[in-house]
Length: 618
Image (cartoon, rainbow, N blue to C red; front, side, top):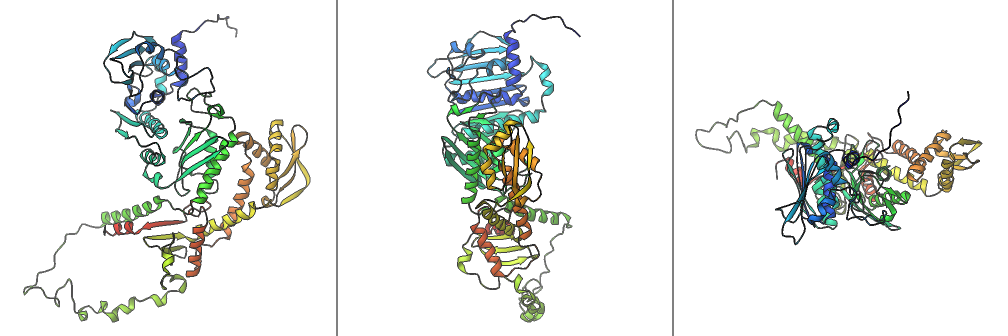
């Protein structure tokens, strides 16, 4: 089929803005993000966001920033007009820089912009409705700027069909505000509206303690209690923030927050770095919780690669990834042994549910007081507290002998028979008191009760010892009778050749074999029979994406983990008191011993105050 030739023509400004809106303004949350970024760039310390109808009916963002004079308002709603960018596109030091947000929003919605700079006698307002700009007029307003967006996408009704429910859009807006609030703890954020509960995030000091308070406001108190501080710097790239201990994880990566020079981003490189850092501490279906801040020279990162500025590109991605992985692993090592507080909370909740179920199934009973004696109360005749042991022989000293079953218990189960040394009670895991169900060690500290899964704990100890032995020296390699030639693209062969020395340390010997092939002469002995072409191609793909070759290391560590699982203390084995205490001391000295190789907790600590609450003593 042939078509008639068409004449090239210039698109109208309205169509151009609508095209830009399709890229930048994906949903109401995108509008909130752009407007909040403008407020932060203007130096605001108080930002109020109001919404209705999931943001489709109303979005209002009010700030106390620097404001704009009346003559600049027409430029603010014109494309590619901005005060944030110099002639160097690589020197971006603000959140916004393209000058597309306001005209894009105005092309698909009813927008009003009201602003008053510091020192001005009055404010000025300009409106944009479906791309039509009104004249500037004076209005009354406080210092700062208020942007009001009504009837989003009324000019492009087809976009409304792609919106989610009001509840989902409201939740997306809340998530955007929380992400921005984490990066700017010194700014007060308020989120209100007819479609939501009010969210108040008071300003806190912009220091380490203040950031932790803001993290607790946004990500919950549980994360703040189960977090590790992260601080590292390498070759001009600084990393700070907090990451969760391995025993505190989630089923998805939604609670992983990344910031590059204060800008919230979502990047596969950073997500992959988190996964690599917790590689042998979390199962594949669990995800760590983190809020990480990367600071570097703007010339070393490109933020102009996505219309919504959500993605970034680093000049040296391997450096950034290595910094994150190394910093988190170092924090895990120096943190020693920590158990998640959520484990104790879950235990308490389980006890409470049991009590509630028992109360719910039991028939309600009325309390009937004992009959009042006709001749007054007597200790010898009272049915509620008899003092004559002869009337209750079952509780007399001879009767209690039947309950003394200590002599029937094996020595393995009576760890607490001998009084523990006081110094053991002051250790993090305390002194072993008993072994329950031949798998759980019960220990006591000065202020808590500790329950240890002996198999999971010993599995971690054996695994760490195996890893240290494996990585302390080059791994043994097995020579192939005939070298395996793997054909691949030339660029993949180049990448593998560049990492040949690193791979040789793990027993994989390879070299170039022509422009588009790799010759593999040795493979790690631990892997046994291996699919060499698939292994080499997986390594090439990982190097292309992350500039690392950790796939081979992961396979070797997986074998070590399997060996540790089969070589550790099995469930059902009785331990003597000396063995239990030795296991507790080893756990205290081993980094990461709070979780096993599969990410499960190795112990749960229940504070004495929690136990007293269970029994109503507090």
